[in-house]
Image 1 (cartoon, rainbow over the protein chains, first blue to last red):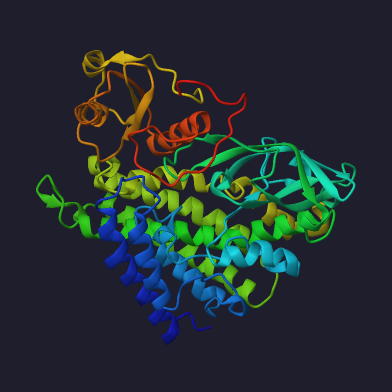
Image 2 (image 1 turned 135 degrees about the vertical axis):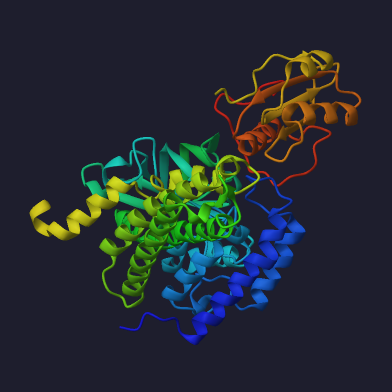
Length: 388
Length: 114
């Protein structure tokens, strides 16, 4: 088994690493410590650079104009892209673009014309509306938003919570119950236009993150055409589940990118900082923290890459993705916490990124399915039919 | 936390006596009580809310009243206040720069003085 990077991977990783260090980190010296956006001229300038690098729109399939880069390499890139202050929730401030809502690649031709292509051209934005006040990790049971057929339309009533980007979106994927007796087989995914009467962004949900907020949505007799069903009637659960599983890999990669950067900063710092006449690096307590960090990072990285490799090869990867998300979010939190401890007072000050990473990393153990749900997913895969 | 900023309006002098160096958001209003400027004191603000409000009062000469809210979620709260102002009045406060904002449609419709 060869675990070394290919020459092409080395080249790409090196480019992204330089981009983060030479373009992103200097800009962050002047941004608010909680910022998640660049000034528009900087954003446009850097987007041109990522296009020149051939790395814009990493998650867009080649047939739609994206670079043809395999998932393992994209995962390695995700690890690099997150190695800065805003890296967890705004890796490189979005200058590498993205696929937007990958579910739209499975849309009808008419839906692609109206929603997918404008999104890929940067003309439209979408949101993913799954979670509700009743829960997000168990969509089969938690979805209470209802859609009722009325002639050629569907009428949606209900609400969503923890939805990112809905206030700025032109459309969204909204999951609603279309058959209340069928559990997971009674959920449908609708593409809704946000300028329709009955679509409301009621409030911002303030959390530990200061900039990258979520919103609460309400639907009041929101009419959606039958043509705006994504996939098949009552088959929305599979779309949601596929998205939840795939999202876990880059989500985990971002956590480990931040952990790597935190560890790098600590390794630079501890030989310089002296206490009681000797550098911190000579203290066993500090050495053990660094060792535990290194182990946490390595373990997580291999598990993430295994999940990406399985997904790349078309094998089942639900268990591996859950494991990656679980291990990386928990390890990332521990690494950042230890680094804060090594930096002492500086570690909790906004002068350095640790306090932001600490707050945001805490959310990662809950977002995209909490650790307990990941363990549940893994247990189901291990125990199979006996648990069902 | 209430959706709209509900702290009491203070005169400029009173505000500078009470406010300290925390992070948070604030609004300035003119004599007629119209909100003319919304801003925040973030992690890089010299003097926190006190420093930012003091500077803003100097720059916005027509401001006579101030209210502020201490919060560590200053960026999302700042954008929320601007979006609420836009929902209520159809535009941003007169002295605020254009920023990329989303849309809010708060329950119960618009309200004055947000």
